[in-house]
Image (cartoon, rainbow, N blue to C red):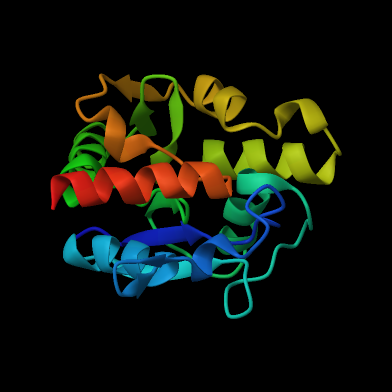
Length: 184
């Protein structure tokens, strides 16, 4: 049995949105609760990075990699299924494909040109990469794209582009809500 954990990235400043994206309401759920429900539906225990009740960043303002780095210093999972809190159309099917491919290959897996959501096995190579990126102050290494290249990550073809839409501004949020209404 895998010790993969679901990780919700909820520590951004939400400056473009103008309010906390984790607290935005999708139907009757906050985005944080929606994200938690998706990961739980896949049978994963869920942790949250950032926000008022999440694991705090050891490197404030360091982005997604800093959140992953902080989580790995707090818990010891064998892998993480990482998703941002701002993907209101994400589905368990889209996440399940990452989880399945990652568990099968033992490699990091994301979608083509879309680095989150991400299946990330916790290996010594990952730990070494993050240690160099954050202890030696190498800002160049602090990107998901570079990390995935260094760890021979795989990119799956996108099968549901709408599911991978981020809502970073009030306008994008309204567009996503409209898309949800059109489906209902």
